[in-house]
Image 1 (cartoon, rainbow, N blue to C red):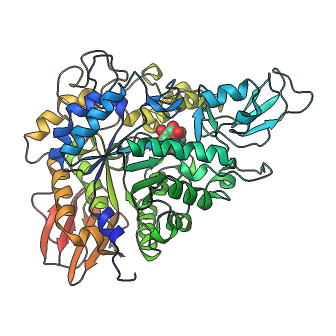
Image 2: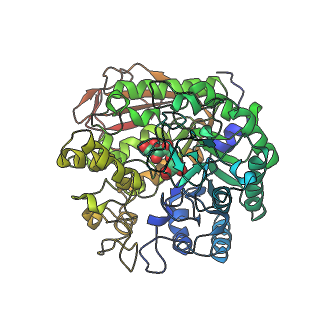
Image 3: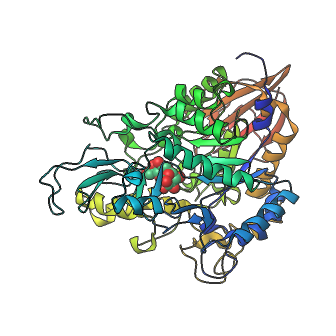
Length: 553
Ligand code: TEU
């Protein structure tokens, strides 16, 4: 790469972000759902971990069909999560501890309960133009609406269009049918969303995540082909222009921002995040979290393909660096099953699996994200029945898989390993029956293993998963090499090993990670000082099961 290190690199490279899925973090009022005051009560815990910002998932007014990603009012707080005073208190208390708040802006769609959509449904042409409405045929009826405008699939299953008999029109919903896609081609819509940004900026918010923001620009003419349609609207035609305008008008250029990019490309992400383009700070892409999707199918099971994982990390780490872009580093979020269960072996090597993964990503070039409970090594759910799931996508696919011919048991097994609820079970604060999360009945079940995997016990154990995360965070704070150093992937002697080096001036850090339950050969290099590793005793020349270690050479 060009050896010029920019301000941006130091700014983003020195930060660690902690994601809070508000429903599941901490409940202050015993209604079974986490809330803003619950977060405030845990700020000391977060400060102690060492993170800089918390990304809080949406807490705006919402019917909660998609747990807050269906926003009905962007400027007010859903009573489920608290009040504006609670938000202001959280913001002040966080700032006292040097913690920033990152808000989650869901701008691709609104809830169908949003005032704009209601006015559209009432036939107001101004608001019809806020969404993607398309006329149905002259003979369409509620029972028989005819063919939708395209064959695009909703991300949550089924066709992406919903017919409205009273208007004789279809509207587009790339997600649930209660999440109507906004019409970003309408300048009035773009101005409304900029106003929302300004509203939160005026409240002192200076970090934002933008939900599925690379889906906002849809192609003209409503094309279809023999795919699910995503290639037509992911990184769509006017995406860069719309982002640049939003960033300029919302006055957020150079702030800590991240765009969630669905089915994106490296080239697009370079443009999204190269400071010269004046778009976003960094991007989430999900390619590395699809290496266990057989034939790109989420709702089917396979073991992770480690060589594919390695190649994805290599191409994104080296490619983003070369192009002046900036990566987000993560394994986990509220849409993903817990990664230690997925990439590791939590029965035999729980500690090793839970520490291998962050060693691999936190030492890369980019900004690491920690999803609540990941720092404790929380695992996927232990649910045994579909009735225990709440997520709209999981419930839809349990039905769809059976319609496709799978038995109820087969469908359940897939949902059990793939469900978003697998990562949404409440934060395990202690070993009491409701894990210290709530004094009421939790909205989603809590895995029984919180009797040993919980914050209280890990905070006093110097050898806990949490203590390991603390060390990784502290290392990033201390070492410019980790923050801004160059990155290059190394040829590993085994296809189960991922290895790379970071360099800055004459400093060199080598990271080796064994993604298997068997011993693997280590790189030939010897000597150096072990900076961090997840085995007390490192054996020369060998990587033990799920061992990860980093050496300064
Ligand atoms: O997710 C976007 C997204 O495309 C996925 O992560 C999605 O959940 C998955 O592909 C389905 O298989 C974002 C939010 O993170 C998610 O919680 C929301 O449901 C979604 O947008 C809609 O707002």
